[in-house]
Image (tube, rainbow, N blue to C red; front, side, top):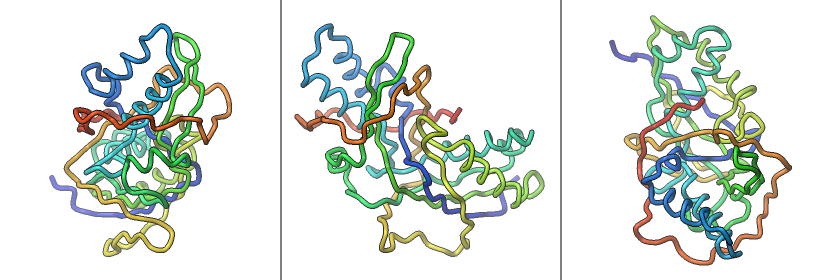
Length: 254
């Protein structure tokens, strides 16, 4: 049976979007290896802390074809979580799909290196872990939007339910890391023929539908103080050539 009907919605952030890619749970990932090597040092220098922040940021950003995006499975997980509040989680899981990663629209640099250097797109905060309090650095997008495409089975779900779940998700759940404080959004239905445009207030960053980057909340991590939006972190050296953004097995947004 095919997903025969299509809907499109524009998500507009009402709270900053924080990213954390589930690739970092893989101990064989290049970013994870470098993070472990630095974090395992008994006596860290300022340069070590600066480098750790940089690697955490690059390893956490959701990307598709080198550009920030919101992964399709993150959207699906959020919708299903919202549907569960109406005791229809199973219908959402089986009755709809998000067809592609959503290009992230925002005002700012297009390249990841330039984004990292711009303090507006870093958020650094202390979090509580089983081993104690540690600092974490996340990609942060203060003003953002994305247009998503949903295909669904009319025999399982209907348009009104999908829109209701999206609005519930935007109001109560959010997407990304440290939600629902972050990642909340408003929802606007758009015509199926409408093409996403950068317009005067943003820039469209193209994402290919084939890539599906991982997403995860920070298991066991709880922010303990108000975050600092302008961390004193220097871009001391470029990332090594062997460290590349790569696809990971998608994990559902919990």
